[in-house]
Image (cartoon, rainbow, N blue to C red; front, top):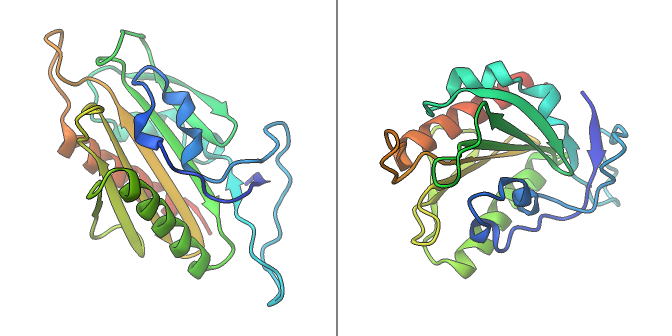
Length: 206
């Protein structure tokens, strides 16, 4: 599967983005990669080298049908759009927030399990620095996982992130919340779907 070299995890302000700007959430995971290239990353690093995480192209790993089979939303999904460090799955219609449903998925190869754990913990610490108690441990997903959401300024959005072996992945689910035009899709349903999506991601990796 295609990989793209990337830099260090940059996560501060992740949950502060506007509901209609799901694509801007690419700051969650390592940035700095060339969005036009997908150069395979080295599978191992020597003891004197620092392992460099590489993006696994999520649009090639997880299909729209995969997302639709897990989605908690009433609006079906229509396509997947590659972004600089993520894949954005879009719905068949585009209502204004907070109804606008969306899924953003990122997957990274951190070369070693230790580096993947460090990555998911760095995300936790950065988010907790700005929003104390924002991160809640999530049992039964990978080697270590967290859920984020229910902040007063962003009630329609949740994030689930996890490390499993050498891999780090995160899923963002946004929309269909607190609106009279249809049933609300609440926090628990989105977290459950996000966790199931990451389990599928890890099951597809070597």
